[in-house]
Amino acid sequence: TCDMKGFIAASIALAPMFATKVKDRPLHFAFTYDEETGCIGAGHLAENLRARGLVPAVAIVGEPTEMRIIEGHKGCYEYTTHFHGLEGHGSSPERGVNAVEYAVRYVNYLLQVKENLRNMSPADSRFDPPWSTVNVGAFNGGVAHNVIASKARVDWEMRPVQKTDADYVKASLLGYCENDLLPAMRAIFPDARIETQTIGEVEGLIPSDVNEARRIVTELTGRQDADVVPFGTEAGIFQAMGMDVVLCGPGSIAQAHKADEFVAIDQIKKCLTMLERLGDKMSA
Image (cartoon, rainbow, N blue to C red):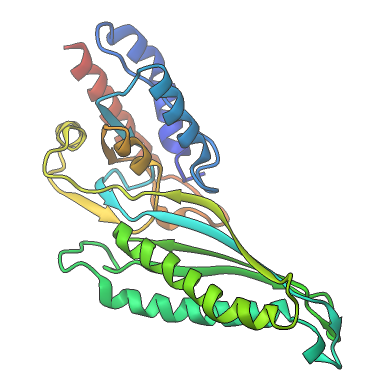
């Protein structure tokens, strides 16, 4: 498949070459898990590296970039918000607390906050779109037409350009729940509650003027330009550890997360060439 697998295959294919050529400088392959559900594996890897006193100077994350050099991306914060109301017969809605209705109000407010983010975009933002985004990915609740729903859940995410935007979204939603939704719910059912579960909060990759990873990959690929992308990766975790990081890998994000993913053979060849040049550089 497209998402990272091409880079992993190329790295493993050239592992014997690296083992033969690279003798005096440490080179690590790091394969992580659960990147799509909160970058859990990368978080564990970072903890393990710190505990062992290993902080590499440079990291190349092989996400599908069509072998372009990517020096920045937005963060990715994922949440599930649970609504707990009071079940009852649909003919007497005033005697229950309809979790679905309150979840709908929550989503409507979240969409208002989403629109406000458009006006908070940094003037120098290079992202497309330049502002932080919000997406409501799933909505579930209720059991039948004639039953007041006692439970509902909303799966949502935001992709912040800057941390202050994430703080604004979270503070706005917390205030709305505490000042509007919960008082109305608890006026009927004191045990009503709204709980937000953090699935993952992964910081973005922040472009910097000095980036040794960018310099090295520029030399290896011959590309002089570095870009930014709106999707998230584990790179921000490694940058937070003190590494210089870029993304550069075979394949296109346009082919990822859909049926019949693929990586063009030409992309694999370009990736192999880059890694072979890295081996030559590290053995010089």
